[in-house]
Length: 225
Image 1 (cartoon, rainbow, N blue to C red):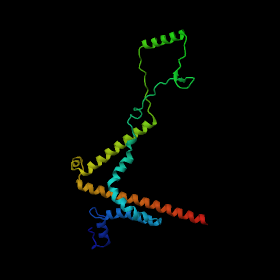
Image 2 (cartoon, helix red, strand yellow; image 1 turned 180 degrees about the vertical axis):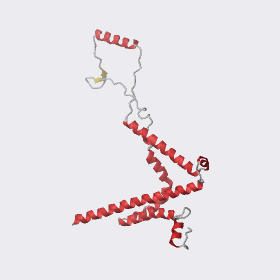
Image 3 (tube, helix red, strand yellow; image 1 turned 30 degrees about the vertical axis):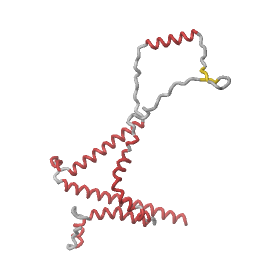
Image 4 (cartoon, rainbow, N blue to C red; image 1 turned 120 degrees about the vertical axis):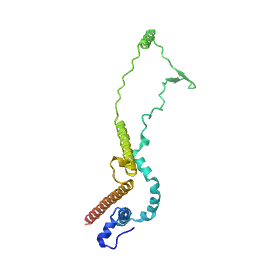
């Protein structure tokens, strides 16, 4: 960390916030871990910062990206049209009755008049001789299908934009499209913007934390009175 301490406050701030300085890293660390500790002490419950937080830091880098992608896309719930296709159709059943002694079961067939048998046979023959006309199935898109389609398109767009961003930042081949800075410079600017955004988000969360704590304290004071 090479900070300019010979030219007064102006020189120090200039070196602190310069693109090559480590000031943004210090700000990002203070805005995340520092605010975590501060908020824990404000709520008078800092014990997890000493018991669980070190283990969380060690394991966070190994699975946080996988969990983010898995939770965001949730593709394991999409069956892609195969759900229910492996279910067997219900087989026809027959009605049986037990004998008087209750030991055996018999199938009871009701005798029908010859006229009914002839009419059923005639209807069966007519149905067999009638040319088959395939029914027109009207596909109606359900609300669940719409949700799945939207989720698939959103995740595909998210993956594509992330890949495009990585290529534009790290590849030297994009210089032909009008990017004047080198890939190292673009990478530095990208991480600076990312660290500033992280610090800003952490600050907003801390402000909300303080607002909730102050509001709760005022409500408790008013309730006691």
